Each structure stands twice: as C-alpha cells, then as structure tokens.
Length: 217
Image (cartoon, rainbow, N blue to C red):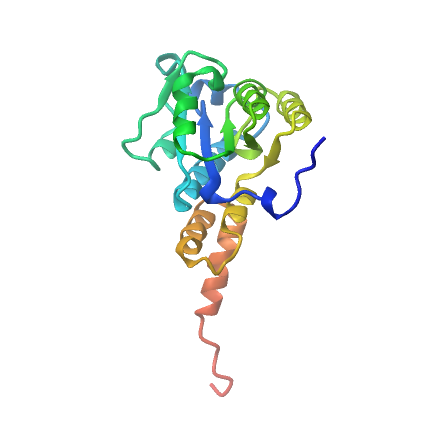
C-alpha cells in the first residue's frame, strides 16, 4: 500500500477538477446517512469554494426527467453551465463525463455525490484504478443508510482513495492566508456555509469594530 503523505500529496487548485454527481431530489428523498439540509448546504459550499479557486466543475445527473434536476443551490453557482445527464449508474462509464474531465488537463479528481455507496464509489474506484488521484468529499455526499455510507468509505479507502470534508478541501486549496486573491472569496463561503465558524467570524469582526468605552465617561 502506498501511503498518502508529504507536501506533494496535498490538493492544489491548479491541479484539481471537481465532479458533482446526482445531487438530485430523488436521491435526497432517501438520504439517511446525514441530515439532508446539511448535505445540500455542504454541496453548495463545495461548489462555491471550487468557483473561488477556479477549479473546473463538472455537474452530472442520472435520468433527470425522473430523478429531478440538480439542486439549484449548486446550479445557480454556475449559471448557464450544461449538466451532463446520464443513463449510466457509474459516472465513469459515461464518455461525456470522462472526456470533460480529461479536457481540463487536471489529475487530482475530486468527487462528491449521492449516493455514496453507488454513484460515488463506482466512479471513484474505477478512476483510481486508471491512475487518477481521487478524493471523495464525504460530507457533500450521502448514502441510503449510515451503514451504506460508512461501508462505501471503507471500501474506497481500501482502494487507495483519499477522504476529506469540504472545508478541509477548501483549506488545502487556500494553504496560505497571504493568498489574497482567494482569501476573501473563501471567507464569504465560510460565512454562508460553515454555520458556527461563519457566525464566529462575523462576531469577531463586530468586536474588532466596536469602540472601547471611555473609562472616564
């Protein structure tokens, strides 16, 4: 087994491409591994973070006319972008998606989707076997059951796939707060989608801008 360590193993925005798979109403309706509100929030945060860092994003659905359209919280981040609709359950068997990924020239493949045990695991395992550096964003994904989600993660780890949460990925892409070209945009995403941490940041800004009372008054 090859261990994933060292600076070169960290994800870089210039080398990353994100594929968001089947964030659709039908899949969300039977999502039981997470709070559905959290998955929608995290998927939207992931999409916005990718946009901040200029990471190409491929959106794909499966049988949209039955399963419904990709959540607007995601598609609204990329107005006018075509969603690739598939019949293949395994995204990585659809040449339109694979060709779109290859066209980016990136090799760090980031995947999030519904459901983890099916529509995430299959393409992740296949792509990893073909030599792609694959990372799955676990909290912007979800399964039919807690067991299904967890077993899928174990299966993918055994296949050499990296696991991260969306904010860990965004932080890895940022790497240095001196990178001013993306720092402000990332903070905006944190405020919108990282709940307590976003509120704490706003509170900090409030305190920093609150005049200190005059002790003599």
